[in-house]
Length: 508
Image (cartoon, rainbow, N blue to C red; front, side):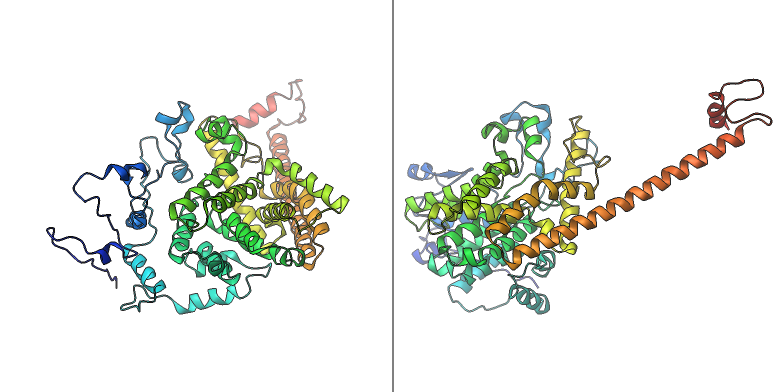
């Protein structure tokens, strides 16, 4: 049963009571403007899209809860941003449009955050107002299982796929809220729960669910891994509450609004983001700026001094930018140098920040270090995303990027190469820094997973070779059967060239 809250209807000739204007969870308008009149010029100083609002009117931002999307849903605006012919691709519907005819228009995706009545319910609940009528009936069995899983959220074999199903696709929101509360960060930093909830809902929404890999489930997986690393002895006794808050926020937003294609694709298609960030850490800069945009839109840290808020945004960007895989050797060399010289002092804020960067890098590519059942799913997902990019490149007659051609690559050979040249060097150095049971477990899983992929590759190669051998034998037998009596497969009695045999065989 769907229950709706009805707002009170006030006569037009009566002023709006102040208590209605001050209610959280309702759309309010300041006394200096009206629904049908012209807005006060002072209110035009701040605009979001086509919506003008007064800076003192916080509730005007909740217009978004009524499905009014301020930001554009399209990933491209070719007519304004660039003239490159390939920018007609809309990354929001990138993978769902493959195979569609040119005349078929993509379906408009309807984005929904929270219904208005659900938002009123959450606001009233947080203010201590008793709930009159339940808005929805939750399956207690599922929510109970999710709560049981959160009790073991620090285990390395945590199944994020199962957790996401048990939370009805809200794994990122549920996990992040739990970790923030577990560390006491909500109370310590005096975070407004309504603002925090809105921030996390918008973050989860801005991850593209159409992406096989770079989606909200991946963000939740990285966040859970980051939590495991921050619990390691060296970090647990050194990190401050501010470091922990920064690390969790970076993990949650590190791939925000990822389009499902890589940086080289954006560069060679002359995408506006590549131009904006000068072909340098294009995606990572976009993830960071998107996160800052949501922080400011929700006012999550508006209660902090401006200097502290700006500093947090800068350090958040420093962490997210460290996940650029093209800068892997740069960070790895610096990490190795510190370990060789034994001069990492976690009492220094700059050194703690660097370790957070390395921890986030490890969390971002930790899939090969998970148990086989989880690692295999991630491997298949990321490879499928690569292949979908390759399909798009073929469709638009672009050069196919490395590892993106599904005809010449397999999941196994891609994963073996990734482990050998990217994952193993990084996690070997991490194990030097934090020589714990978790580090040895991760290296052990990666070794087993690599061997398993190698075995599967050999099986596939053997099957392919047997098929080729069988096909060759069949062709030889067919050629011999087609030869005239008294002649060999190479020449006939009359000295006919062997080139006539396949021709005769092809005609038969």
